[in-house]
Amino acid sequence: MSKAFPEGFLWGGATAANQLEGAWNADGKGLSVSDVYTFDVTTPKARWLDQWLGMTHQQVAEAQDPNSTKYYPKRNGNDFYHHYKEDIALFAEMGFKCFRMSIAWTRIFPRGDETTPNEAGLAFYDDVFNTLRQHGIEPIVSLSHYEMPLALVTDYGGWPNRQVVDFYVRFATTVFTRYRKQVKYWMTFNEINCVKHHPYVSVGVIEEDHPNIEQDKYQGAHHQFVASALATKACHAIIPGSQVGCMISYQILYPNTCHPDDQLACEEAQRVSLFFSDVQARGYYPSWAKRMLAEKGVVLKMAVGDEEILRQYPVDYVSFSYYMSSTISAHPEKLQGATGNLITGGIRNPYLETSDWGWQIDPKGLRLALNQLYDRYQKPLFIAENGLGAVDEVNPDGSINDDYRIDYLRQHIEQIQEAIADGVDLFGYTWWGPIDVVSAGTAQMSKRYGFIYVDQDDMGNGTLARSRKKSFWWYKKVIASNGQDL
Ligand code: BG6
Image (tube, rainbow, N blue to C red; front, side):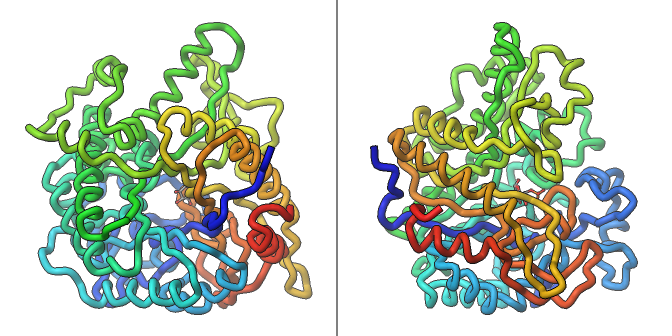
């Protein structure tokens, strides 16, 4: 059985504008929801919500004050904005075939509701894409990666407001037109299913302000589905041969026991994520959605024609992030206080090891995920994110021996090989954070994923110098051998 990766397989790395670009107020850029996310040393696991609770317009204004003493790591990222030529050259040295990145909406439309784009923002990405192309690297671009314009939240109430669909489609159409010759692969919304964990950054809803948060989450998601379908339509019209994908955060879930109740709970929990890719890949709400939404007290408002739009413009491919698996029990008291998974609070799986941040490492879960998603959709798949956040030690000679990262990567690639041998149609793999970036969840710089080290600490101190870790050379040989030399 051949375990060869297909010819032309897209090996590379994935990033998001708000976690690496920095330059948060340069060249006309507006504030995004991520620009007001602080890092607080006393609560290093600061949640998005802490930043939003009771936030007033005055506080938003304060957040714009460059002299503020609060530290906002996502305003600085790793300063890719001023280092992109050097960074892309390092990606090229590793042999990257592709680079996944996002366009910061606020560089193009600073508030989100303008009718004319910001030329300086457009010019920046022109040069990034040209630089990638000069190195033979295919850009894969997310339109929205936890960085919607803050004004769309404060002045419009976020995605539950239908007007945001029009703003998004204007943004999408603008960048499709501008970059039609440079970008073929697009993703409409990063981890669209993560609205369940952090509605503030996903759909721009501040939980405490909304008595029926479930209603707002799913109404916001419905508008994103429509926006995604309309963007897919526009992309195909503007860029012949373009490929548009959805993107979900996917975890394999295991029942805690073989009791049928645990199996049912597990199935139900898995559907909470699959709901999102079902709508985008199949073009309609799954049969069980009616009951699921009713049980959450959600009554969706659909405009005339919405269902037709979803049906006509499903995505071309399905992409997902995969970091871990989780274990589900039908008994809520077992879920409480569970330590297996920091994101979803699932139960600890005794057969798996965890990362420094408690994420359960499960390479075989990736093979399962690939098979499940391919069986379900029969559309090409793309692994948009996979990676290990760890604490790296810099040796006195400057070297960084991140064997743990190499082991993680090797084990996951082996399972991808198995999935390809199983018959899964997979066309690419992008490691999360090939260069150290600010963490999405904790805003720490010390939660490092990179093959390239960036000299910067959690409070933004450092020279920003880039250096190669041991994994840099390892990934380079993997790419050179198209996944055979592990
Ligand atoms: C994914 C996000 O959920 O996980 C990324 O799409 C994020 O933006 C990545 O950085 C890893 O999560 P974290 O919290 O470790 O940065």
